[in-house]
Image (cartoon, rainbow over all chains, first blue to last red):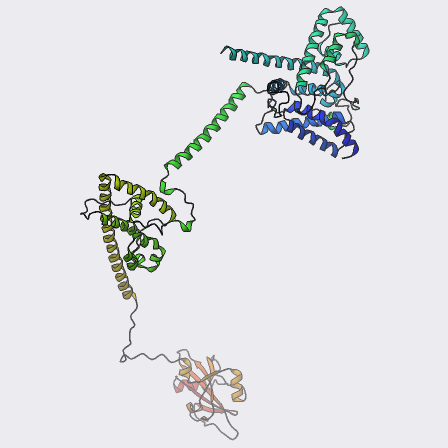
Length: 172
Length: 453
């Protein structure tokens, strides 16, 4: 790996893995896809690395998801994390539950909204999001607005369902 | 200015608008309370969405790489101070326009994303269908496992899989012929039988019939019980009964391992039964009598089989003897018809020769009868031709006329000064004496003389 690619790796790898983890819900899978992305960057160094890396990573996610769907595997957004609790078992349990609900809410979005939201969360501006996803810059605001609203509404729906279920348990 | 749409408000809060656009929006928000309320709502959604996404982070990383929602909220509360937030990473505007008909060469990063075929949102029907399919597979697996357990439970105990190799497995019971039973090989192959019987005479008599394996221990058991007349017979003695009798005979040393296992269990059961109650003893006695009867039946059957085999052997010998050809001696008085004489014997030649040999004998080419095809040429003794030198052979050319009669033209080379006897059937050509002989009449032979060349 050349010095430029090493710098690219150090600069974008954590962000890429984070975005892929939010997209897939599987840390190992996210790391594998990020490494595959950089392997392709080694084979064909990009001119504009940041949009290129994330676009390739999202394409790999789609291909991987397609293969997983073929094998009957579903997007594991609800998969529980396997890391050790750091803030105590209760706090860790709450964090995992909240993370699972967020991933479930993300899963309710369509592909374009979800990717635009994740890219924005990684600091992409509208032009970069448009370039990465192949959209018009003027449509990014509307896309993000729709994605944010749907995400929050889906999350709130799950919160209400959770509270309702807890109420049933308390009543019983 | 019309009301602000939600996308514009998000772009405003994201700092994606130009300065003049921000100024226009600020002016509108100052005069439009509805858009102000909507802006607050958008701020709330944006902050909540950022918080939710930031809550999904890797276990090993620290949250904060994303733009802080608090910063955005503080900025949104003061629209006049909206500034473009500092990006966490260096921004480099893409140099390529959006892909389209007039766009430049496509790069991997600006290609339109392919259609996603992965079903993210499953419908209720899909979930139900998938659940039914899973239940179907579970039912199928359950049926297979249940059938396997059922098969294992219904399997006879004595058919359990043996851990011993094939060569060490005990041979199954089989009826052997008397010849096999009496052979030494059979005894050597089944030494355990004789030992199990505890009968030295078994080894001496060499009768280790497999069926007698079950009957012999029964006899041993019978020796303990009273000898009573047989009242019941069973056609087949169960294997465990036989094993139990073997155990009571106390001979386990040379048995196969699984037989030993059966015998040890049977021994325990047999001893307990004999000591516990008389009823069990009666059962054992009945079984012993039945076994004795079965042994008698076996002996009778073997005798019948041996007799049948012997009879069949005698019949076979007689049949073979009858089928064998008896050597016939020809009577000395019966005259044998003499073999017909060969053509050489009829021509009285002792050796066939060719033209070259004939020319060598005669000192020149042999003479022939014109119009006839010679059968062969040969040498005859000179004594057979009157007037010929008896010490030298005569070259004889043999013909056969249309009636099968032999015509022989004899030739002999004359020595210097020697002259052939002249006659109707003898003459001389140059220095060769010629004779005509044969089975035809003299008249016919004379006609042939004129044709000799």
